[in-house]
Image (cartoon, rainbow, N blue to C red; front, side):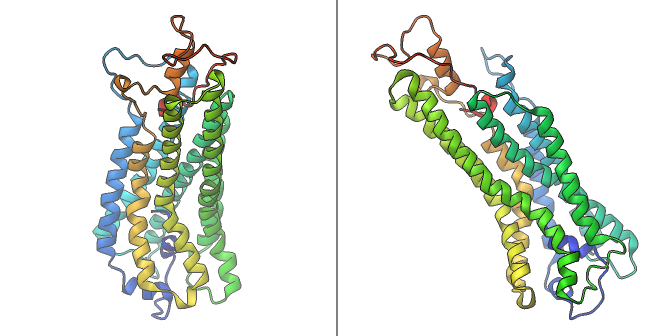
Length: 356
């Protein structure tokens, strides 16, 4: 999981039983928590691997040669790779914590502090990359509908560069120079030492939660116009295409909210109720995060996959509408309809790998 509160446990603790971190750990079953992390990260790794490897072709099916038909697939692969490496970090951390039975390093245990900070930075970096790749998939879907080319080089530079900046800044302020973030005695010191890492973690999540639904709503409206206007009509076939696209966009957003909303709730509680922290409720949220954060890879494999419709039920996809429009044997793709009353314009590919 990726959470700034857990990352503070990498610091040297004070052995002061009045310290809130010590109080939480006294009620925290680390073995069961790490077991949940171990299982969920393993499932996440399997989901990432499934997403990365190419799908077997069915009979009479060929791989698309058009560049526009694979642009979405490429983004999904990089998203899955980032998910894989993040889940691998959770797997290694939970395995070692289960082995040595100690999450919080002892006061003079510099080795554990170093390991904990490195594995936290690893996990934080790659989960932040997944958030940016999720955002760029939505942006590229919108650009594809608008007929614009993909900006692969820009996506890569931002998706890997921005997490490096946010992770290094947030964790450097937290851990340097001596990893003593539990020795803070004033609110102003906490704001300067701990808050930047929370902002570096939660700001990208909040951006995706706000931006992606807006982008997908605009994309749904645009594709509705793209499907309907060439024929100047909107029948059940066109409605099926638009409704299923909207369902897919909704599920993509829902998965992201399900996996990362608990983290935002945890951060809000920590900074608004620190002196009256509901410890039991916080621990419950940690278990939820331990389960859902690594499971993002598996859920992504379900919602980003290529959705195939049953041709025998006459439910064509957007690409199949394009083929229908360009057919020489039919004047109109709808049986019994009149020839188009508007000039036919090509329907743009919508990240064909991940479209219906």
